[in-house]
Every structure is written in C-alpha cells, then in structure tokens.
Length: 318
Ligand SMILES: Cc1ncc(C[n+]2csc(CCOP(=O)(O)OP(=O)(O)O)c2C)c(N)n1
Ligand code: SF4
Ligand SMILES: [Mg+2]
Image 1 (cartoon, rainbow, N blue to C red):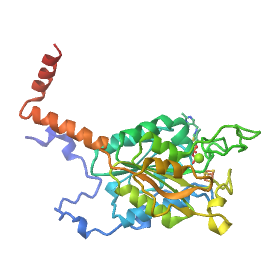
Image 2: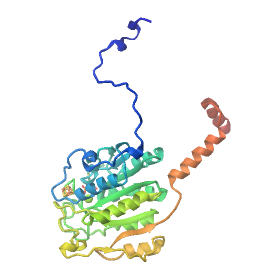
Image 3: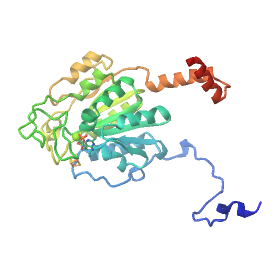
Image 4: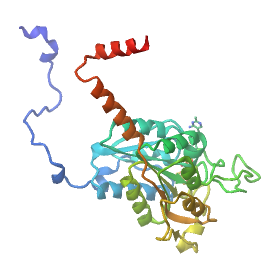
C-alpha cells in the first residue's frame, strides 16, 4: 500500500517519541512524593489564612500514605477553601458551588482503586450543598469530606454562613445574625455519616491524625476542621487555641465511638467543644452494594451478547 493512503503517517514528528520498552516500576520501588512534587499552583489565599495549614497537612498525608500522582483525587465546590484542587498536583476538580459531593460520589463508585478527598467550606457544605451532604452521608459513599469551617463566606467577602455564631455582623446581617447556627458534627451524625470528627487547623498533628483515620474508614468520613478567615472573621477560634489562652479539649479515650447517642451529646458540648472522633460505625457502603448488584447481574447474563441482554430486558417489560 502506498504511503499516500495514510497521509498522516508521513507527517513530521514534533515530539520526542521514545519507543524503547520500559520496565514497569513496582510500587515498592517508588518513593513517596515530596511536597515539592505534590504542589501545583501557588495558593492564592490571604497570608495567615487557616487553609494553608490544611493544604500542608494534605501534602504530608500524601507523602505518608504513599499516594502517587495517578492516585491523588481532590474534589471541591466553590469558595476560598474550595480552590484546594488547584494547588495539588494530581487528579482533581473544582466543581459547581455545593455540588462537590455528587461529583465525588460518581468518581468514588466508578474508581474503587482511588480514595477520593473532598475539601470545601461551611457555606458550600451546609448552605447550597446542605442536601447533598445529607444524602452522601446516609448513602455511605466511600470518600473523605473535610469541611474547612471559618464560620463565614470568605470568597464573596463576608456574608453570614450556616455556622456563623448568633450576633455575627456581616454584609447580610448588618445588625448581627439572629439565626441559630448549625452544629456540623450533630448534623453529620443525624444524617447517618459513619465517621464523624472535629479538628482545628491550628493543631496540625491532630488534623493529620484525623485525616489518616478518615482515609482508613470504609465509608463516608466527615471532618469539621476549624480554619480561620483572618480577613473577615479574625480571632473566631481563639477559644480553641491554647497559645491564645483557649483550650483544645481532646475527646477522652473512654468515649465509645460506636455509641451514636453519646456522640451526639458530646457534639453538643458548649464552645470551644470537643475535638477528635465522635462517631464511627461499620455499615455497608453504597460502593459495595452497587458492586454486588452489578456482579450478580453480570453472573446472570454471562456469555450473552449486549443485544441479547437488551432483548431479555424488553421481553421482561412486555
Ligand atoms: C450557585 C452559586 N451561588 C452563589 C455563588 C457565590 N458564592 C461563591 S463561594 C460562596 C460561599 C463560599 O463560602 P464557603 O463555602 O464558606 O467558603 P469560604 O470562601 O469561606 O472558604 C458563594 C455564596 C456561586 N458561586 N454559585
Ligand atoms: S478571605 Fe478569608 S478564607 Fe478567603 S483566603 Fe482570605 S483569609 Fe482565607
Ligand atoms: Mg466559609
């Protein structure tokens, strides 16, 4: 056949195409990624923003847990905190405001080899995304959701959020908020989340411990992480920062994390409250349930062509 039949084959090569076979690298031979290899764009947060600390600890988690670029999956909605995926070198998506969880659920169910991390803010999670939070929790989708709670809408420059305290003055509540704030930990437990924890960006070792425990949990793991907005709500969490005269009360070792009612009660302790794992339960994930339905169905139609499967379904509907 003349080369004219395949004109594209005669095009000059622009790249350096190396066709020498390469020996696949074994995971055991790969080195953990360093912060330098994991960081992407320079974060655009205000100097001193609590979100820097959460990002640094995510890099640390990636290094400790030997997640390589092709396994890193970082999803977020919209907000200052939700800019997170831009700063991480790996798979990621900056999705629609409040809709990070449905998107991440699809990734989680279709790619069981990945652990999906979702980062976002209190507005993204509990205002516009409030319904998705409830349903992702009750469905027990396997992923880790870290809400960087600064008790304000930061990106849009100071509106009252669902976690802003009573009396908080903002552009939407010039005379102080009169709306009772939600308690994210209580909300998560009530919605059916199977791992519920609280931490603070000002306690780095604690954040890392919570993220590691969340990652190891087979189900929906939720972490409320207090993260100060130094621009619009400075000093919001001083009461939980020991070097500022506050107290960081870790949950007592005796607390039974499988006791839902005890967890709920503990979550209700007045500000600055308690920090650590409130609740943890083993329940089947939607990932496992869906995988079983698919496997059972595949077993029933084994050996059949696609059109035969379709015909069978049509016949059943007659
Ligand atoms: C559908 C839609 N509604 C409203 C907005 C405007 N908006 C962008 S971020 C945001 C709130 C962000 O607050 P939060 O989730 O607490 O994140 P933070 O900036 O505080 O980290 C709002 C209302 C939007 N982008 N899309
Ligand atoms: S506005 Fe607040 S939340 Fe946003 S980057 Fe600045 S300090 Fe952080
Ligand atoms: Mg916020």
